[in-house]
View 1 (cartoon, rainbow, N blue to C red):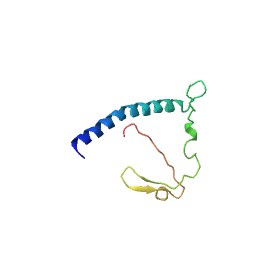
View 2 (cartoon, rainbow, N blue to C red; view 1 turned 30 degrees about the vertical axis):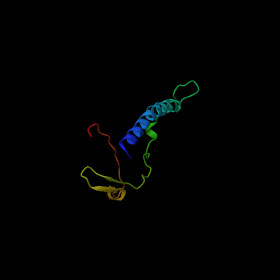
View 3 (cartoon, helix red, strand yellow; view 1 turned 135 degrees about the vertical axis):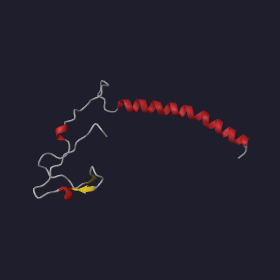
View 4 (tube, one colour; view 1 turned 60 degrees about the vertical axis):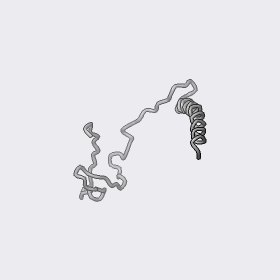
Length: 95
């Protein structure tokens, strides 16, 4: 491709890029704003009941694999003792 053809192609691409970007942005703005809204346009927020998340007390947890604080891979069987196991997941503010 010659330099003249390359410049013409580049100019053509630049000419179409801005209108496409504006159109795409407008579609995202309108479509994104409509998600989760009622008829009045007010977003509905469902409360999250934290106590219902995850396994409940006394419920058997599914098999898992994860890394412990020392970098060792652990699974449910490796932490289970003769009387079961108590799992505590603590979300620290110091990550």
